[in-house]
Image: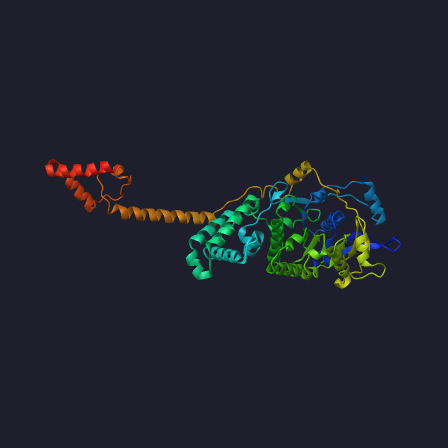
Length: 507
Protein backbone atom coordinates (compact mmCIF):
# COMPACT_ATOMS: atom_id res chain seq x y z
CA UNK A 1 0.00 0.00 0.00
CA UNK A 2 3.08 2.25 0.29
CA UNK A 3 6.32 1.98 -1.63
CA UNK A 4 9.84 1.30 -0.39
CA UNK A 5 10.59 4.99 -0.01
CA UNK A 6 8.37 5.43 3.05
CA UNK A 7 7.32 3.93 6.38
CA UNK A 8 3.63 3.21 6.92
CA UNK A 9 2.52 4.74 10.22
CA UNK A 10 -1.27 4.38 10.16
CA UNK A 11 -4.43 5.70 8.59
CA UNK A 12 -5.94 9.14 9.10
CA UNK A 13 -9.67 9.52 9.72
CA UNK A 14 -12.31 11.79 8.26
CA UNK A 15 -14.60 13.80 10.58
CA UNK A 16 -17.13 10.95 10.45
CA UNK A 17 -14.33 8.54 11.58
CA UNK A 18 -14.17 6.76 8.23
CA UNK A 19 -10.89 5.88 6.50
CA UNK A 20 -9.16 8.81 4.79
CA UNK A 21 -5.64 7.89 3.66
CA UNK A 22 -2.38 6.18 4.63
CA UNK A 23 -0.02 8.30 6.71
CA UNK A 24 3.65 7.68 6.06
CA UNK A 25 7.11 8.96 6.87
CA UNK A 26 9.19 9.61 3.77
CA UNK A 27 12.61 8.00 4.20
CA UNK A 28 14.38 10.86 2.45
CA UNK A 29 13.24 13.09 5.32
CA UNK A 30 14.00 10.57 8.05
CA UNK A 31 17.12 12.54 8.99
CA UNK A 32 15.03 15.68 9.63
CA UNK A 33 14.44 14.42 13.18
CA UNK A 34 11.18 13.88 14.98
CA UNK A 35 9.15 13.99 18.17
CA UNK A 36 6.86 11.41 19.78
CA UNK A 37 4.93 12.75 22.77
CA UNK A 38 1.98 11.77 24.94
CA UNK A 39 0.92 10.89 28.44
CA UNK A 40 1.77 7.54 30.04
CA UNK A 41 -0.24 4.67 28.56
CA UNK A 42 -1.29 6.43 25.35
CA UNK A 43 0.83 4.33 22.96
CA UNK A 44 4.20 6.10 22.61
CA UNK A 45 6.16 2.85 22.90
CA UNK A 46 4.15 1.24 20.09
CA UNK A 47 4.74 4.28 17.87
CA UNK A 48 8.46 3.99 18.59
CA UNK A 49 8.30 0.26 17.84
CA UNK A 50 6.62 0.61 14.45
CA UNK A 51 9.01 3.39 13.43
CA UNK A 52 11.99 1.23 14.41
CA UNK A 53 10.51 -1.69 12.45
CA UNK A 54 10.03 0.48 9.39
CA UNK A 55 13.54 1.89 9.46
CA UNK A 56 15.01 -1.59 9.97
CA UNK A 57 13.13 -3.02 7.00
CA UNK A 58 14.41 -0.12 4.90
CA UNK A 59 18.01 -1.05 5.81
CA UNK A 60 18.51 1.76 8.36
CA UNK A 61 20.21 0.83 11.66
CA UNK A 62 18.39 2.01 14.78
CA UNK A 63 19.51 2.79 18.34
CA UNK A 64 16.87 3.10 21.05
CA UNK A 65 16.51 2.85 24.81
CA UNK A 66 14.13 0.38 26.44
CA UNK A 67 12.93 2.05 29.62
CA UNK A 68 10.34 -0.49 30.80
CA UNK A 69 11.49 -3.62 28.97
CA UNK A 70 8.48 -3.56 26.60
CA UNK A 71 10.54 -2.70 23.54
CA UNK A 72 12.49 -5.96 23.77
CA UNK A 73 9.56 -7.68 22.05
CA UNK A 74 10.74 -6.23 18.75
CA UNK A 75 13.22 -9.13 18.60
CA UNK A 76 10.41 -11.71 18.42
CA UNK A 77 7.72 -12.45 15.87
CA UNK A 78 4.31 -10.98 16.64
CA UNK A 79 1.14 -12.95 17.30
CA UNK A 80 -2.29 -12.57 15.70
CA UNK A 81 -4.26 -11.19 18.64
CA UNK A 82 -7.82 -10.02 18.03
CA UNK A 83 -7.27 -6.33 18.80
CA UNK A 84 -4.18 -6.23 16.59
CA UNK A 85 -5.93 -7.87 13.66
CA UNK A 86 -8.87 -5.49 14.09
CA UNK A 87 -6.56 -2.47 14.02
CA UNK A 88 -4.83 -3.83 10.89
CA UNK A 89 -8.24 -3.99 9.19
CA UNK A 90 -9.11 -0.43 10.30
CA UNK A 91 -5.94 1.00 8.77
CA UNK A 92 -6.14 -1.29 5.71
CA UNK A 93 -2.86 -3.02 6.43
CA UNK A 94 -3.21 -5.94 4.05
CA UNK A 95 -1.52 -8.33 4.32
CA UNK A 96 -0.71 -8.00 8.03
CA UNK A 97 2.53 -9.94 8.23
CA UNK A 98 4.44 -10.81 11.41
CA UNK A 99 8.22 -10.45 11.71
CA UNK A 100 11.08 -10.71 14.10
CA UNK A 101 13.79 -8.10 13.77
CA UNK A 102 17.59 -8.26 14.10
CA UNK A 103 18.25 -6.91 17.60
CA UNK A 104 21.48 -6.34 19.53
CA UNK A 105 20.91 -5.89 23.27
CA UNK A 106 23.18 -3.52 25.20
CA UNK A 107 23.41 -2.70 28.90
CA UNK A 108 25.75 -0.30 30.69
CA UNK A 109 25.81 -2.76 33.60
CA UNK A 110 26.37 -5.82 31.38
CA UNK A 111 23.38 -7.69 32.85
CA UNK A 112 20.71 -7.64 30.12
CA UNK A 113 22.94 -7.06 27.14
CA UNK A 114 26.49 -6.60 25.96
CA UNK A 115 28.49 -4.22 28.17
CA UNK A 116 28.70 -0.76 26.72
CA UNK A 117 31.56 1.52 27.74
CA UNK A 118 33.20 4.84 27.02
CA UNK A 119 36.51 6.23 28.21
CA UNK A 120 36.65 9.30 30.41
CA UNK A 121 38.67 11.04 27.68
CA UNK A 122 35.87 10.48 25.18
CA UNK A 123 33.30 11.75 27.64
CA UNK A 124 35.21 15.00 28.13
CA UNK A 125 35.10 17.59 30.92
CA UNK A 126 31.78 19.19 29.94
CA UNK A 127 29.72 16.00 29.98
CA UNK A 128 31.49 14.69 33.08
CA UNK A 129 30.76 17.94 34.88
CA UNK A 130 27.11 17.61 33.85
CA UNK A 131 27.02 14.01 35.05
CA UNK A 132 28.56 14.96 38.40
CA UNK A 133 26.54 18.16 38.80
CA UNK A 134 29.71 20.16 39.50
CA UNK A 135 29.84 23.83 40.41
CA UNK A 136 31.53 26.34 38.11
CA UNK A 137 34.72 26.25 40.19
CA UNK A 138 34.77 22.44 40.23
CA UNK A 139 34.15 22.34 36.48
CA UNK A 140 37.17 24.62 36.10
CA UNK A 141 39.31 22.10 37.98
CA UNK A 142 37.95 19.33 35.75
CA UNK A 143 38.98 21.28 32.64
CA UNK A 144 42.46 21.78 34.12
CA UNK A 145 42.70 18.03 34.77
CA UNK A 146 41.99 17.22 31.12
CA UNK A 147 44.46 19.89 30.00
CA UNK A 148 47.18 18.36 32.20
CA UNK A 149 46.37 14.89 30.86
CA UNK A 150 46.83 16.14 27.28
CA UNK A 151 50.07 17.97 28.01
CA UNK A 152 51.66 15.13 29.98
CA UNK A 153 50.45 12.26 27.81
CA UNK A 154 48.26 10.67 30.46
CA UNK A 155 45.50 8.45 29.11
CA UNK A 156 42.19 8.86 30.97
CA UNK A 157 40.34 5.61 30.40
CA UNK A 158 38.43 4.80 33.57
CA UNK A 159 37.43 6.36 36.88
CA UNK A 160 40.62 5.38 38.71
CA UNK A 161 42.66 7.24 36.08
CA UNK A 162 40.72 10.41 36.76
CA UNK A 163 40.92 9.87 40.52
CA UNK A 164 44.70 9.41 40.35
CA UNK A 165 45.12 12.52 38.19
CA UNK A 166 43.04 14.62 40.59
CA UNK A 167 45.17 13.40 43.52
CA UNK A 168 48.29 14.39 41.58
CA UNK A 169 46.79 17.81 40.86
CA UNK A 170 46.07 18.32 44.56
CA UNK A 171 49.73 17.67 45.36
CA UNK A 172 50.79 20.20 42.70
CA UNK A 173 48.10 22.76 43.50
CA UNK A 174 50.51 25.67 44.02
CA UNK A 175 52.39 25.05 40.80
CA UNK A 176 49.23 24.56 38.71
CA UNK A 177 47.39 27.52 40.24
CA UNK A 178 50.15 29.80 38.97
CA UNK A 179 49.70 28.45 35.43
CA UNK A 180 45.97 27.82 35.06
CA UNK A 181 44.19 29.66 37.86
CA UNK A 182 43.09 28.74 41.33
CA UNK A 183 43.14 25.01 42.10
CA UNK A 184 41.77 24.51 45.60
CA UNK A 185 41.79 21.43 47.77
CA UNK A 186 38.05 21.75 48.57
CA UNK A 187 37.18 21.67 44.84
CA UNK A 188 39.38 18.64 44.21
CA UNK A 189 37.98 16.92 47.30
CA UNK A 190 34.39 17.57 46.20
CA UNK A 191 35.08 16.06 42.77
CA UNK A 192 36.72 13.01 44.36
CA UNK A 193 33.70 12.47 46.62
CA UNK A 194 31.34 12.70 43.66
CA UNK A 195 33.45 10.21 41.72
CA UNK A 196 33.18 7.83 44.67
CA UNK A 197 29.39 8.15 44.64
CA UNK A 198 29.31 7.47 40.89
CA UNK A 199 31.51 4.43 41.41
CA UNK A 200 29.13 3.07 44.05
CA UNK A 201 26.17 3.67 41.73
CA UNK A 202 27.74 1.47 39.07
CA UNK A 203 29.15 4.15 36.77
CA UNK A 204 32.56 2.47 37.02
CA UNK A 205 31.14 -0.24 34.74
CA UNK A 206 30.57 2.35 32.04
CA UNK A 207 34.00 3.98 32.03
CA UNK A 208 36.76 1.88 30.54
CA UNK A 209 37.74 -0.27 27.60
CA UNK A 210 36.92 -1.76 25.20
CA UNK A 211 34.89 1.32 24.34
CA UNK A 212 31.84 1.09 22.11
CA UNK A 213 32.67 1.23 18.42
CA UNK A 214 30.18 3.32 16.47
CA UNK A 215 30.34 0.77 13.64
CA UNK A 216 28.74 -1.83 15.94
CA UNK A 217 25.51 0.16 16.23
CA UNK A 218 25.43 0.81 12.48
CA UNK A 219 25.26 -2.79 11.34
CA UNK A 220 23.05 -4.27 8.64
CA UNK A 221 22.16 -7.93 8.17
CA UNK A 222 22.85 -10.11 5.16
CA UNK A 223 19.26 -9.66 4.00
CA UNK A 224 19.73 -5.89 4.01
CA UNK A 225 17.83 -4.98 7.17
CA UNK A 226 19.19 -2.52 9.69
CA UNK A 227 20.16 -3.89 13.11
CA UNK A 228 18.15 -2.47 16.02
CA UNK A 229 20.36 -1.74 19.05
CA UNK A 230 18.22 -1.82 22.20
CA UNK A 231 19.72 -0.36 25.37
CA UNK A 232 18.32 -1.95 28.54
CA UNK A 233 17.57 1.15 30.61
CA UNK A 234 15.26 -0.04 33.40
CA UNK A 235 18.11 -0.20 35.94
CA UNK A 236 19.89 2.72 34.32
CA UNK A 237 16.88 4.92 35.03
CA UNK A 238 17.76 4.68 38.73
CA UNK A 239 20.56 7.08 37.78
CA UNK A 240 18.82 9.33 35.22
CA UNK A 241 21.75 11.73 34.98
CA UNK A 242 24.03 8.89 33.83
CA UNK A 243 21.38 7.82 31.30
CA UNK A 244 21.04 11.31 29.83
CA UNK A 245 24.80 11.89 29.80
CA UNK A 246 25.45 8.59 28.05
CA UNK A 247 22.94 9.26 25.28
CA UNK A 248 24.24 12.77 24.77
CA UNK A 249 27.78 11.35 24.59
CA UNK A 250 26.62 8.86 21.97
CA UNK A 251 25.07 11.62 19.86
CA UNK A 252 28.26 13.65 20.18
CA UNK A 253 30.37 10.66 19.12
CA UNK A 254 28.19 10.14 16.06
CA UNK A 255 28.58 13.81 15.21
CA UNK A 256 32.37 13.65 15.64
CA UNK A 257 33.02 10.40 13.77
CA UNK A 258 30.58 10.30 10.87
CA UNK A 259 31.44 12.07 7.60
CA UNK A 260 29.33 14.73 5.96
CA UNK A 261 26.93 13.12 3.49
CA UNK A 262 24.19 15.71 3.02
CA UNK A 263 20.63 14.62 2.25
CA UNK A 264 20.37 10.95 1.28
CA UNK A 265 17.54 8.76 0.04
CA UNK A 266 17.35 7.42 3.59
CA UNK A 267 19.24 7.97 6.88
CA UNK A 268 22.47 6.25 7.82
CA UNK A 269 21.21 5.78 11.40
CA UNK A 270 18.17 6.71 13.47
CA UNK A 271 18.52 7.47 17.15
CA UNK A 272 15.50 7.34 19.52
CA UNK A 273 15.95 9.25 22.79
CA UNK A 274 13.25 8.01 25.20
CA UNK A 275 12.49 10.00 28.37
CA UNK A 276 14.08 12.95 26.58
CA UNK A 277 13.19 15.40 29.35
CA UNK A 278 16.07 13.95 31.39
CA UNK A 279 18.52 15.48 28.93
CA UNK A 280 17.36 19.00 29.63
CA UNK A 281 16.40 18.94 33.32
CA UNK A 282 18.64 21.31 35.31
CA UNK A 283 21.03 21.43 32.36
CA UNK A 284 23.30 24.50 32.12
CA UNK A 285 22.87 26.73 29.09
CA UNK A 286 26.19 25.63 27.58
CA UNK A 287 24.95 22.02 27.53
CA UNK A 288 21.58 22.92 25.98
CA UNK A 289 23.44 24.93 23.34
CA UNK A 290 25.56 21.86 22.67
CA UNK A 291 22.47 19.67 22.20
CA UNK A 292 20.95 22.23 19.84
CA UNK A 293 24.16 22.34 17.82
CA UNK A 294 24.39 18.54 17.55
CA UNK A 295 20.72 18.17 16.57
CA UNK A 296 21.01 20.92 13.97
CA UNK A 297 24.23 19.69 12.37
CA UNK A 298 24.02 15.91 12.73
CA UNK A 299 21.36 15.86 10.03
CA UNK A 300 24.05 16.38 7.40
CA UNK A 301 25.78 13.25 8.77
CA UNK A 302 22.74 11.21 7.78
CA UNK A 303 21.53 10.70 11.37
CA UNK A 304 17.94 11.22 12.44
CA UNK A 305 17.24 11.99 16.12
CA UNK A 306 13.77 11.28 17.51
CA UNK A 307 12.88 12.54 20.98
CA UNK A 308 10.29 10.57 22.93
CA UNK A 309 8.78 12.27 25.97
CA UNK A 310 5.50 12.92 27.74
CA UNK A 311 5.27 16.66 27.30
CA UNK A 312 6.39 18.85 24.38
CA UNK A 313 7.35 21.51 26.94
CA UNK A 314 10.16 19.16 28.00
CA UNK A 315 12.06 20.10 24.84
CA UNK A 316 13.68 23.55 24.56
CA UNK A 317 12.13 25.70 21.86
CA UNK A 318 15.31 25.90 19.76
CA UNK A 319 15.55 22.10 19.69
CA UNK A 320 11.81 21.69 19.12
CA UNK A 321 12.08 23.82 16.00
CA UNK A 322 14.46 21.24 14.47
CA UNK A 323 11.98 18.33 14.75
CA UNK A 324 10.05 17.97 11.49
CA UNK A 325 8.22 14.65 11.92
CA UNK A 326 5.62 14.68 14.73
CA UNK A 327 3.49 12.03 16.43
CA UNK A 328 1.36 13.48 19.23
CA UNK A 329 -0.55 11.07 21.47
CA UNK A 330 -3.12 12.15 24.05
CA UNK A 331 -2.24 14.67 26.75
CA UNK A 332 -4.05 15.34 30.01
CA UNK A 333 -5.06 18.93 30.75
CA UNK A 334 -5.91 19.08 34.45
CA UNK A 335 -3.31 21.60 35.65
CA UNK A 336 -2.33 25.00 34.17
CA UNK A 337 1.01 23.56 33.02
CA UNK A 338 -0.72 20.65 31.30
CA UNK A 339 -3.13 23.04 29.60
CA UNK A 340 -0.15 25.09 28.42
CA UNK A 341 1.46 21.90 27.08
CA UNK A 342 -1.69 21.13 25.07
CA UNK A 343 -1.71 24.62 23.55
CA UNK A 344 2.02 24.40 22.77
CA UNK A 345 1.59 21.03 21.07
CA UNK A 346 -1.38 22.27 19.04
CA UNK A 347 0.48 25.38 17.88
CA UNK A 348 3.39 23.34 16.51
CA UNK A 349 1.17 21.62 13.94
CA UNK A 350 -0.02 22.89 10.59
CA UNK A 351 -3.76 23.38 11.31
CA UNK A 352 -6.47 21.18 9.89
CA UNK A 353 -9.82 22.92 9.31
CA UNK A 354 -11.71 19.68 10.01
CA UNK A 355 -11.03 19.74 13.77
CA UNK A 356 -9.62 21.83 16.62
CA UNK A 357 -6.15 20.49 17.34
CA UNK A 358 -6.03 21.49 21.02
CA UNK A 359 -9.38 19.81 21.72
CA UNK A 360 -8.44 16.68 19.78
CA UNK A 361 -5.22 16.19 21.77
CA UNK A 362 -7.20 15.70 24.98
CA UNK A 363 -9.67 13.30 23.33
CA UNK A 364 -7.35 10.88 21.55
CA UNK A 365 -7.81 7.20 22.39
CA UNK A 366 -4.97 4.79 23.15
CA UNK A 367 -3.17 3.96 19.92
CA UNK A 368 -4.45 7.10 18.23
CA UNK A 369 -2.33 10.19 17.52
CA UNK A 370 -2.12 13.46 15.70
CA UNK A 371 0.43 12.93 12.94
CA UNK A 372 2.27 15.43 10.78
CA UNK A 373 5.18 14.27 8.64
CA UNK A 374 7.31 16.21 6.19
CA UNK A 375 5.97 16.17 2.64
CA UNK A 376 7.64 17.08 -0.65
CA UNK A 377 10.26 19.84 -0.32
CA UNK A 378 10.35 19.22 3.44
CA UNK A 379 7.11 21.07 4.18
CA UNK A 380 5.12 19.81 7.21
CA UNK A 381 1.90 18.06 6.20
CA UNK A 382 -1.43 19.19 7.56
CA UNK A 383 -1.99 17.46 10.90
CA UNK A 384 -4.21 14.39 10.72
CA UNK A 385 -6.03 12.38 13.36
CA UNK A 386 -4.51 8.94 12.83
CA UNK A 387 -4.95 5.36 13.98
CA UNK A 388 -1.46 3.94 14.50
CA UNK A 389 -0.80 0.63 12.76
CA UNK A 390 -0.14 -2.51 14.83
CA UNK A 391 3.46 -3.74 15.11
CA UNK A 392 4.70 -6.78 13.19
CA UNK A 393 6.86 -7.91 16.12
CA UNK A 394 5.77 -9.02 19.57
CA UNK A 395 3.88 -6.52 21.69
CA UNK A 396 5.42 -6.68 25.16
CA UNK A 397 8.67 -7.92 26.72
CA UNK A 398 10.57 -11.11 25.99
CA UNK A 399 11.56 -13.73 28.56
CA UNK A 400 15.03 -13.87 30.19
CA UNK A 401 15.80 -17.12 28.33
CA UNK A 402 14.91 -15.54 25.00
CA UNK A 403 17.11 -12.57 25.80
CA UNK A 404 20.08 -14.79 26.74
CA UNK A 405 19.74 -16.71 23.48
CA UNK A 406 19.75 -13.52 21.41
CA UNK A 407 22.78 -12.17 23.30
CA UNK A 408 24.69 -15.44 22.78
CA UNK A 409 24.01 -15.36 19.02
CA UNK A 410 24.74 -11.65 18.64
CA UNK A 411 27.26 -10.49 15.99
CA UNK A 412 29.22 -8.70 18.74
CA UNK A 413 29.19 -11.60 21.21
CA UNK A 414 32.50 -11.77 23.10
CA UNK A 415 33.84 -8.44 21.84
CA UNK A 416 32.92 -6.38 24.90
CA UNK A 417 32.59 -8.98 27.64
CA UNK A 418 36.10 -8.71 29.14
CA UNK A 419 37.40 -5.44 30.55
CA UNK A 420 40.78 -4.34 29.16
CA UNK A 421 42.94 -2.38 31.63
CA UNK A 422 46.00 -1.15 29.77
CA UNK A 423 48.62 1.26 31.10
CA UNK A 424 47.06 4.68 31.56
CA UNK A 425 47.15 7.64 33.96
CA UNK A 426 46.65 5.53 37.10
CA UNK A 427 49.57 3.20 36.39
CA UNK A 428 51.85 5.98 35.10
CA UNK A 429 51.26 8.24 38.09
CA UNK A 430 51.61 5.31 40.46
CA UNK A 431 54.97 4.47 38.90
CA UNK A 432 56.12 8.11 39.12
CA UNK A 433 55.10 8.29 42.76
CA UNK A 434 57.04 5.11 43.59
CA UNK A 435 60.11 6.34 41.73
CA UNK A 436 59.97 9.65 43.61
CA UNK A 437 59.62 7.85 46.95
CA UNK A 438 62.53 5.52 46.17
CA UNK A 439 64.73 8.44 45.13
CA UNK A 440 63.85 10.34 48.29
CA UNK A 441 64.54 7.29 50.46
CA UNK A 442 67.89 6.72 48.76
CA UNK A 443 68.86 10.36 49.19
CA UNK A 444 67.86 10.25 52.85
CA UNK A 445 69.82 7.05 53.34
CA UNK A 446 72.93 8.51 51.74
CA UNK A 447 72.58 11.64 53.81
CA UNK A 448 72.19 9.78 57.10
CA UNK A 449 74.83 7.20 56.16
CA UNK A 450 77.52 9.88 55.88
CA UNK A 451 77.16 11.30 59.40
CA UNK A 452 75.92 8.66 61.84
CA UNK A 453 78.09 6.78 64.33
CA UNK A 454 78.13 3.03 63.82
CA UNK A 455 79.80 0.10 65.46
CA UNK A 456 80.17 -3.03 63.35
CA UNK A 457 77.61 -5.59 64.54
CA UNK A 458 75.63 -3.03 66.56
CA UNK A 459 73.34 -1.56 63.86
CA UNK A 460 70.24 -3.16 65.43
CA UNK A 461 71.12 -1.72 68.80
CA UNK A 462 71.28 1.72 67.20
CA UNK A 463 67.77 1.12 65.89
CA UNK A 464 68.59 1.66 62.21
CA UNK A 465 68.72 -1.85 60.81
CA UNK A 466 70.30 -0.40 57.63
CA UNK A 467 73.80 -0.73 56.23
CA UNK A 468 75.43 1.62 53.81
CA UNK A 469 75.90 0.12 50.37
CA UNK A 470 79.37 1.61 50.01
CA UNK A 471 82.38 -0.26 51.50
CA UNK A 472 84.34 2.90 52.20
CA UNK A 473 84.79 3.89 55.86
CA UNK A 474 83.64 7.22 57.10
CA UNK A 475 85.85 9.26 59.37
CA UNK A 476 83.58 8.40 62.30
CA UNK A 477 83.83 4.64 61.62
CA UNK A 478 87.61 4.83 61.47
CA UNK A 479 87.65 6.64 64.81
CA UNK A 480 85.36 4.01 66.41
CA UNK A 481 87.57 1.17 65.17
CA UNK A 482 90.62 2.95 66.56
CA UNK A 483 88.87 3.20 69.91
CA UNK A 484 88.03 -0.52 69.87
CA UNK A 485 91.63 -1.40 69.05
CA UNK A 486 92.69 0.52 72.12
CA UNK A 487 90.41 -1.57 74.33
CA UNK A 488 93.44 -3.23 75.88
CA UNK A 489 94.35 -0.07 77.67
CA UNK A 490 92.47 1.02 80.73
CA UNK A 491 91.55 4.26 78.99
CA UNK A 492 90.17 2.29 76.02
CA UNK A 493 88.14 0.00 78.27
CA UNK A 494 86.70 3.01 80.07
CA UNK A 495 85.69 4.63 76.78
CA UNK A 496 84.00 1.45 75.50
CA UNK A 497 82.19 0.84 78.79
CA UNK A 498 81.00 4.42 78.64
CA UNK A 499 79.66 3.98 75.11
CA UNK A 500 78.01 0.59 75.74
CA UNK A 501 76.65 1.68 79.07
CA UNK A 502 74.95 4.70 77.53
CA UNK A 503 73.51 2.47 74.80
CA UNK A 504 72.24 0.01 77.33
CA UNK A 505 70.59 2.81 79.33
CA UNK A 506 69.13 4.19 76.09
CA UNK A 507 67.52 0.86 75.49
